Image 1 (cartoon, helix red, strand yellow):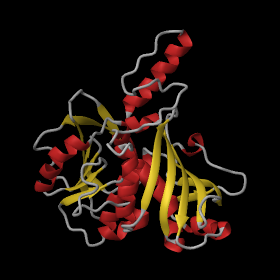
Image 2 (spheres, one colour; image 1 turned 60 degrees about the vertical axis):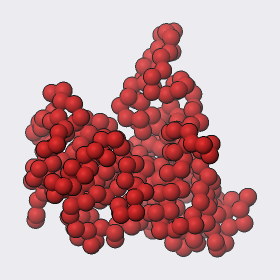
Image 3 (tube, rainbow, N blue to C red; image 1 turned 135 degrees about the vertical axis):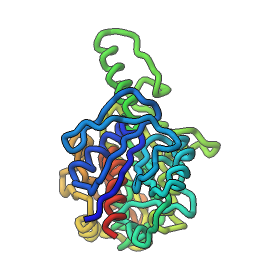
Image 4 (cartoon, one colour; image 1 turned 180 degrees about the vertical axis):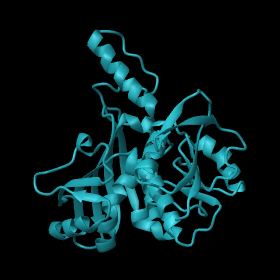
Length: 332
């Protein structure tokens, strides 16, 4: 089997640490692993029972690297993505920097992994937004059968979507509340402990946020469905891990619940909760599959279906999807 020199940028972040773990657990064919962070702080990460030092990012970080997985934000991706490509590397980027660029494939392997079959290195492949990936894991199989036209969706997004700093803020606010201390806010504009915040991302002139726009724009590209529209409200909730999305979808064809469930059962990477069962973030945290439940005919749309889908946004929403892209590249 061929082996590959792999780099992980953002290795000490919440997503980066999951990437390291997944490469190890899934036995990705790694010849050498280079761990990178924007700043050098002396940290190490465990891989194959060895402690690997985390190196400071610089212009020479991608020499002799075959595949680099970026989880360091859009600004860093825009600066160092082209540097890595120039060094002969294929970049799998978790940020929003390249997702809507026409020349950059935006990939969920279970949906459009065929885009990777003719792939020739070097270049950039984009990982979708976490809420987009989780929603489409359920929506795609229904779209193939019934042809989706539009959705109305509300997301319930865990604080780990903001990285380690989001987790720390929830922890510190819960502790402060229990001790009767003043609650400090640094990451979120309002208290997140014991609260919900109905705005995720930057507010746009439309009144929507850029996070809400991503589901529509990225959904169109991934499904290759230019007429797809989505009206989305993204909500930050005091949950540590796993995003949930309540979806009402309208289709071109009349949709039957039993037939919809048949489609969902066949969808790779998706577990169907039937009857009175439904998934919650605690159930799904740490699991590779996304889970769908509360499947029912919608009362507002003639050809409508409502469902509830939950996925670990650090996994299928980020790290796992990136590793699956890498696996597809080496399998081709």
